[in-house]
Structure formats: C-alpha cells, structure tokens
Length: 275
Image (cartoon, rainbow, N blue to C red; front, side, top):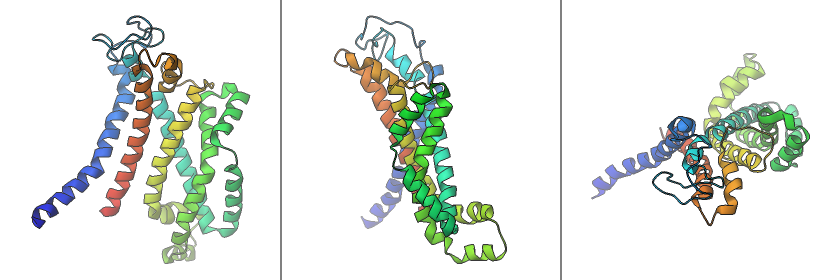
C-alpha cells in the first residue's frame, strides 16, 4: 500500500500542475479563435428579444435578439490582448525599477517614495480621470494609464524580493568586474527572481482583466472589437430574468479566463521550482 500511494502522489502532483495550464490554453485558444469559430456574425438576429436557449441559438438571444453564443465567441480576443499587454508592461517596468531600487539604495529611496505617491490614486479612479479627460486616447491611453497605475505597487514587491539577492556575493563580484546597471539587473538579478516574475505576471493579468473589463463596462472610449464580454454584461443586465445566459455566460468567461491564466502561471512557477 505505501508503494502504491508513493506512485500516485507524483501523478496527482503532475495533474495539479498541468490541469490549470490546459484549461488556460483552451480558454485562450477559444478567445483568440472565437471570431473564426462563431457560427454567425455579431449582429445576426436569431429571434425575439432575450429569447431562451434553443437548438438554433445555444445561449439564446440578447436584448436585440442577436445570438449570444456568437457574441461570446467574438468578445474575448480584445480583452485578452489588452490585458496581456498591460500585464507584461507592468511586470517588466516594475521588475526593472524594483531591481534598481535594491541595487542602488539612494535611487531606491526616490523610487519607493514615488511608488508610495503613485499608490495613493486608485487605478479605477485614475483610469476614469484620464480616459474622460482625453477620450481620443482610446486603447493606447487605457494601456498607458493602467501601466502607470499598476507599476508602483508591483515595483515595491520586486524591491522587497530583490533586496536579499542584491547583497549576494555574485552581485558584488559583478560589480567588482565593473559591470553596469543594465548587466546587473538583466543578467544577474532578474534570473534569480523567476518565481516572483511569474507570480506577479499572473496577478497583473488578473488586475488588467478587471481594469479593462471595467473600462468596457463603463463605456469609456476604448474600442475592443465588435463584441465585448463586459459590454454584453452591461447591455443585457436588464433581461437577466428572461435569459440569464446573456449575462452569466460573459461574466463567467471573464472570471474563468483571468483565474485560469493566473493559476497556470502559478503552476508553471511551482513546476520550475520543484524541478
């Protein structure tokens, strides 16, 4: 019996590591290839307003009688693309700033003060102020404000994680060889923060999905495709009792995509650490 249990434990651990990744890959593929897989156009009518699910429309109709299932397949790629860009930029900028703060205490003091000031303004409020003041900025403006609002806190996390690595002997040896800041950050310090990088990348993706969905829900001037999950939730909320799928399906899609990608990144980090 102990032998059998010992054989099962690695298999169970492997399943726990790779199952989130498989779910994330499936959802990402569906979101990206959704417009190709959709059986109908976004504005194709399938029946009356908030029609119940049937054989022709698996998720029924929306407030205009359009196919909810086709809209669901069309509405994910924009959110996914913008959220990935924001997560990568926030994680990259924060990793560099946090590493510089750990390597150079004088510069680090200024970076941490600036980060403290940046964290005083909530990201949603910053997004509202910026997008409403500069409506023609569109998606680039949304990305910029999300990166600016999300970097300060993440930079503090990286600074704390890099503090111990910055005092190691190999960093001092590199400094003794006359290596510059770019070499120290990219070649010496960041490779030793892989777990922190992966963890923060997953968390920043969840936050980015939240911010981008909020921007779309509030009808801020950012075009994310012909259909959008957050817009579907807002526009169909009045008919949730008539056709709950018109609201619940896009809501679940947003939550499942964010959580599954975050879980996959975390599982990948655990797999690298155990290896």
